Amino acid sequence: MSQNTAIQLRSKIIGVLLRDARLTAGKSLKQVADVIGLSSGTLSAVERGANALSLPELELLAFYLRIPLAHFWSEDIVSQEVSLAETLQAESLLALRHRTVAAMLRQGRNEKSLSQKELSDRTHISPSRIRRYESGETPVPLPELETLAVALGYRLDDFVDSSGPVGQWLTQSKAAAEFDELPRDLQEFLSNPDNRYYLELARRLSDIPVERMRALVDLLNSIVN
Image (cartoon, rainbow, N blue to C red; front, side, top):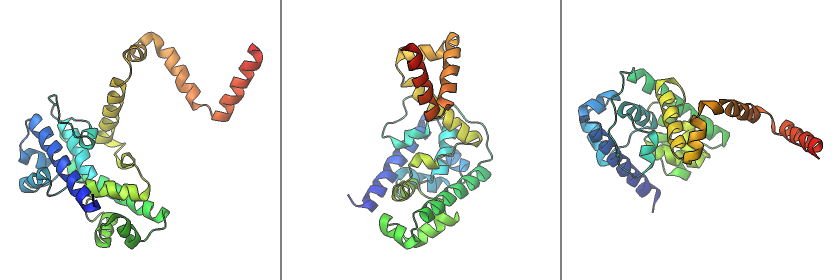
């Protein structure tokens, strides 16, 4: 499969998942489009896979629709109802996130000592588009961001927001999902208030440098033996 075909396929999958999430939330095209400053027609094209959203736009919609961001990495439809989101200063949030993504792309390319033309050759994304992405002039569609991330040695998670109201919700959502994947007995242990001492001890031990931990283990072994 060619790179362009793969990008088109990802755009269609993301579009289907977005439409499913929107309908599950009981939202109209206009309501969702207004959140990220698009027209209903543009969002409809996104849902058909003709266009693609940027990662910051998807982050904001995941927050708005109250679904995990990882929903868009999968091919599974939403199986439960989602709640409404509070009002956000969406325009300023998106502008900041787009600038952050642009700066990361530019930094990643410079660290690899690649020209925009060389990065274009690796990704089949035109140098002019890369220039606009790195300047923050144009939001980066998610399928192209995935392609650029691989070429620059990033993980897509490296670009995900980790601060502000959206970032905090994404972090909490991810933590909740990871907790749900733990074995039941471990969930019960972690949820038991009587075990907080052991959890705090584990947290403090994790902060100890590896070399100091090894020295401590050696000391305990010498005492026991």
